[in-house]
Image (tube, rainbow, N blue to C red; front, side):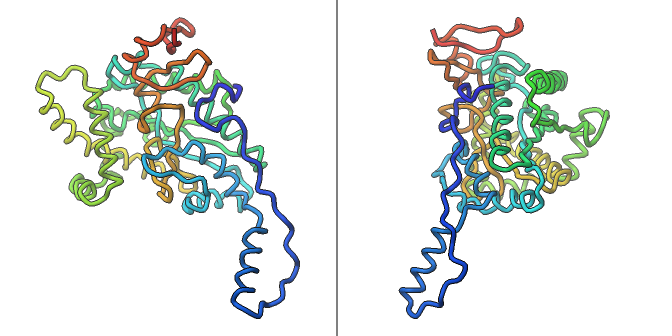
Amino acid sequence: MSQATLTPPAAAAAPSPVETVEAPDTVEAPDTVEALEAVEALETVDAPETVEARILRLLLPYHRTTGAGSADPADFPEQLRQIRQFTDAGEPVLFTLPGFPCKSPNPAKVLGHLPDEGERLSLAFLDRLCARIGETYAPGARILICSDGHIFGDLIHVPDEHIDAYGDELRALIAGEGLARLDTFDLRDVHGDLDHDTKRRLVTEAHAPPVDALRALVRGDEETARLYRGITRFLVEDTADFAGTRSALQRECRARAYSVIARSRAWGDLIADCHPRSVRLSIHPQRPGAEKFGIRLLEAADAWATPWHTAVLRGRGGEARLVHRAEAEKLGRLVLRAGRPSHFEER
């Protein structure tokens, strides 16, 4: 897939390595504080950029955050450490990305319950990102798509059979598009063919934090509070058939949000247990310096937007952005791919 089809900013070309000047073999001890500072400045300028910093620079244009971002790899020490685990060993870098769980159940937001153009473009973008890493680091990189809507399918009111169909089609899409640098991971890799309720229970009991602990975090930690508000908003938007009042719906969704976050963290901990050496990505916004690196998949006005909560609207120039289906229908015409609704094109 050509890079021109990718919509995140600055996706056209990989940053070139920082130009370096060979440092002298020896430096005489300085006689003054000023001389010492001059030598330190020279050494800082002349020091070549590390391979982990060059790899991280390829991700920085796609950093998903709701606050101030940064173009300096030094502001992401945890990601540099995670990448260094692989570069020091000369191994391919493994990224883990929890996401691609299932489509929103709200028909005003999405085209259906199966992957469409949003997933196709996003997966191709991730595969291309790995290829670009391979251009600066020979062992390359792989991304493990940790897809499991089953973890919280009952909480978000999506039938398990829809989640199964979404996951099967996602794997078929990866194979059909030849995205050889992507792999998938789900509960079948951990708990085999047990029924979905049992799988949910086993993961929750083993890894989920207590809801009371999450409530305390929401009260005292802005990052957790922002996540709680974002999840609550999604639950309200995704509930299309609530019979009560708007305020009653919001109360019900606030209660469900704590359980969604608890299970999401349980899923993250399970991934970390199964893949302890990985660079941890997230589809949620993350500040610089956080344990996970939030990554944007496609252009959207909303920092929380994902392909499974929206539809793709292609502009007249071919650029793709994520919007709710109801908005896309007003602006564009529906396009089919292999006989199924795929995306919209602006009129």
